[in-house]
Length: 425
Image (cartoon, rainbow, N blue to C red; front, side, top):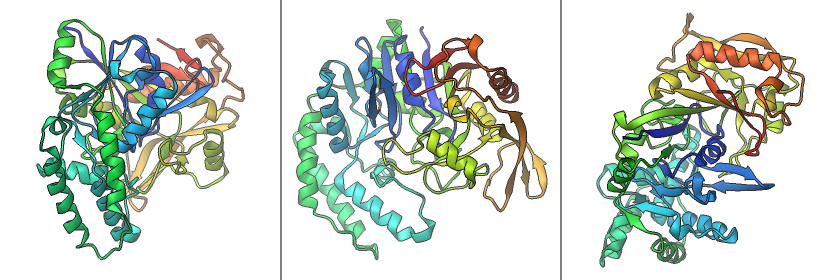
């Protein structure tokens, strides 16, 4: 039986997964999103245009690829409708290229209100939520209260909606936080978006994917966020609410571990993070400012500025190990062009002892990064097209990374456009 390929981020998200999914979509028949919600923003640039997707798989722009939103995803109908409206502007008939798993959960307007109240109540201890209602939706999922796509096919689905919504309003009353909202207004948009959602085919996604595997269709499972935001293996509690690692593809699509073949791990040539949480290699100097400016480091979904720092190889190797990564794609190598010296963290000083593994806590009071330095590449690489044109110092940097984590870098990105991608394999 054909194996499923898996693509996921290895840092704190924003690694450039959308671009690589877009590139790999040409070799796959089905693109399947397996977890997360609309806090993710996958950016694709081609034909001089920039496209940002939040929930819809990145293969939607390819004529031959079918796209499926898996059961592990939480869907905000209002945001989803906006994505669909944008696709219509590009003459994409999404009703023939997009499927929704009946087991995917829906984000209600009151989920977003709970998210805002919870985050506000935390004060200075807030985790940096995007306030999209994703955490509360996953809480209802594990609490066995959630509303799912398949429920929309029932005549009395609004009764279930009303019960859950009323429960949320009671929960809001227990917060000593006043949240201004007009639920009637929010519900107008929500119910209108539900009508649009019903134009997309709902499927029993496990059966669909297993049958397509039997038919030897090539499937690419697409993850969102990054491994260091995983609910179990990330920098808890500053994490997302889903399983962002390879295991999430199994639970989020209904595939078995032995059905996974290639695991494409996406990383930046440096490190970024959005929101709160520990970040050992974060830079607060002109080097960090330069990375942010040249790399245009602002969230595709929220617009929030990203914190920037040198590549953390300790964290990267950890992510490679827990995901079983077989190939690396290194993004934004062009952003580091012109730095005389480039650094990579190769060990931590953890509570006074040097270690090379990812520990329980990477809080700044416990961890100090120890760096290895490299000579930079003083050359604009955005126009290069072949491996032979890559500067030797960049080749040395790549080789060091490969040797450290034990996995080859097979794709090198030298710019945002899909054409600015070099195959190294």
